Image (cartoon, rainbow, N blue to C red; front, top):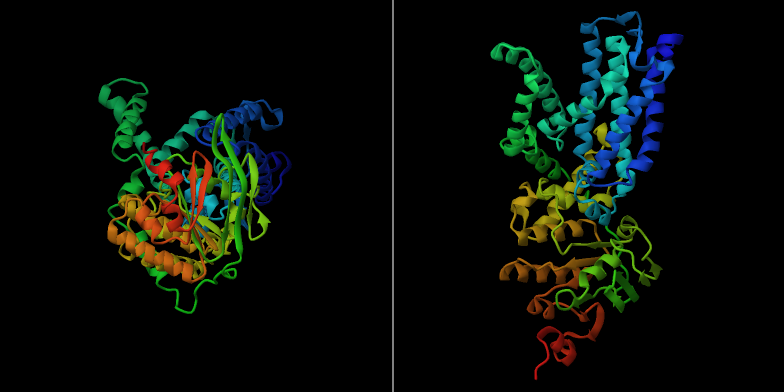
Length: 523
């Protein structure tokens, strides 16, 4: 409107467009990003439909007829008023956006972004502010759309709401599905395949059937079904399985960190000082008391075992301590500070990290990248630095730390394999390495020995003893009593959500109430 009706420079309208787009995206995101799962894309589609009809009824925008005579973009005396000349500007901006997106995803912030889709709880447990990160991604996507709309208007010299209806949104969705939404080059492949294929089918099919009609829609639908059946993640991920260049690049970057450039370590509290206090913790799920009046204390530098039969409430207690769940009563204190009302990311910043009862890895990401997520809080470079490739030194340190921790748990030979391709026992070791990357003060391990062979369990026990000697404190949930009894300093036994007993390993072994809870009463 400003360029067409009032003669404002197109370059000035670009910045005004981006400012307005950022504000609108922030306002819509504040409402929309509270949703998750399929509700989020459905809501964005609803916004698109609403805005389509809004702009189609605004007289100042020409209603559904749109605006014509949009002025051409000029650079000095060079006027980009033909398609060939405008292509240069379009490709320049498109390539810059692609490179910035690729650089961002290949960074500390990019790893966090890639975990948001399915592993948001895990990401938050390592200090990722998931709400802020979702907003950032929403804003970035909106700004790219704003630049695209500006280019579109000045390329065609005409713009109307019809170009941005629901059908256009479906085409964009198909582009992402075809190319692969997990890779930035998937956008290029998907857009190219969809555009070229549709045009070819429009020309070829009417001649083939000797009739006019929308045959391309039918054929395109069949091709989409075949694609989803054979490569449901898209074409680019399928091609990368045969061309794993990214793995070698990560390996080279991780190896560039020198021996004297290690990340700073967290100062551990004095051994024997009060560390974790759980007081009358309560959690109900409807009429079920999953945790009831649970209280125990833990001192720095010890390994405390939390054991009990299946369904005793051990993992729920872990979730309460790390704020995955909020308690219905009681409180939790860490080094004297009450933490039961803090967010997951705030608790991670205080030095509490965990593994999960059910393996919580991003299956398609490499073992090295999954592990590096644990070091998220140990990096400082943000999104702009990542886009401009100014974070390489820090990224090398983070990947080197991840490689070091994987070597400690015996997975140094599996750095660049997909995490989902490992056996369950090795996936649990990846989780332990990821937690160690965070340099925690308190490490919470939820059934770490499940799925491990005898020799692997012995190596894990030796590692945990070494961590204790270094000053790290460990709270352990485990069902393998042979593994537990030879490792822990003290034990807390739970049954039906309550604390049944507490004491040294030999005291717990001789406790009649504990025997009855595990084995049942003996007549």
